[in-house]
Length: 114
Length: 143
Length: 259
Image (cartoon, rainbow over all chains, first blue to last red):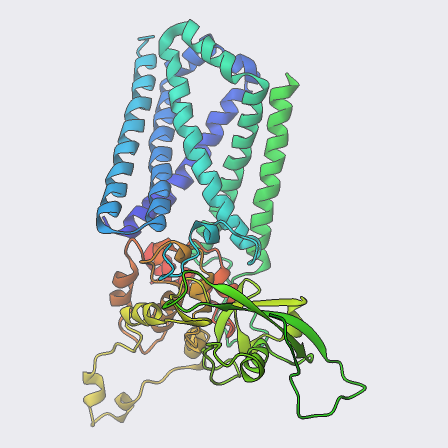
């Protein structure tokens, strides 16, 4: 993939996640911070499909943005063909693993498998 | 780094003291980005405790809803707000917005791209982060 | 080793003279014999117009002629005398001791450049990256072959078209920007702000038709995308090239903001 395409994705995920993360944080302030983190309230949030879709989007957008940022920092620290390939594949694996693990939580909770 | 290349290394990247607020913003952007990535990974793991039922969730809440946990969260709020605000400033800069116009240079050769617009953007991000941190503290410690 | 010298030995002391003195610390390093650099110290007198280069040459003349330093024009035109002066990359001929506001002046070779000896560094990497971006006008030569249409014998530009790129043509290849760049402190493959600014110089030139070629060259993992707009390159440029501005404008082409 061309570096310009990767960076367009990096900028796009950043802009898209700003609003979604703001909504996610504001949800914690609707019923009082401590109450909003209670087991029942969190479960109720997971039953709402729009909320679950928002969580999944945040997960994917931030995983892509964060791991690409890590890739950039690691590529600047050291160079070499083998190292750069390892970094590129490593961050993709990390990205997929995190998205997979987070999606598991979201889907299982939404389906009531707690 | 080898003497051959005479590169400053991480010490040079992490030393923002010689070039003004823009270099400091560059360093803070890196630090907040890494910090937020670490928090994000931990947050995804932390929230997976909902699958352990009420006991598992409450156990984890007991660990995070402490004074130390709240202070840590306040820092995360600050990092998030700075990274977002400065990120938007940088994206505008990358698109050529606010970096000035080319012109025939004249003594003292002040760079047009290092102008007050971007400096205000950086300082605003820092101030907004501080305000957000104070609001976060008011919410978490006020209850 | 502190030694006393006078910048203007030939003239008798003037009771109205404003001569002061500073401690000049010069980094000494010979890669053939030394493992790391060491500093030699000299007390040097200076007037308010004395430049760091003049102080270094005074040391060479009166104390240690083996100090290796590169210089030529002494008027910030050739770009030879770039070095770290009190931790910041500057041209020695363009930096007055009086403006440093310090009793101690430390001069070291520019970082991110391999050291030849003492203050002289190798410029091969800068030349290589500069060549990589094709620093010449790329145009269809057939336009110049026509003898029937005299208009095609020269490329006409309006003053506005010249304004678009002339600032970036001021580059004297001194390397201060590459020395100041935070990416170049760790990334050996990064093209550097000097090459990127020169890429923009040609892309912005209305006579040039090589925009796509150059954009392809810099659109790689160690190309333009490893610039993060820290702006240090523009802070240290002695000729007002403002590489950071050129790089952001260049990025605009790749992001689709400019065409």
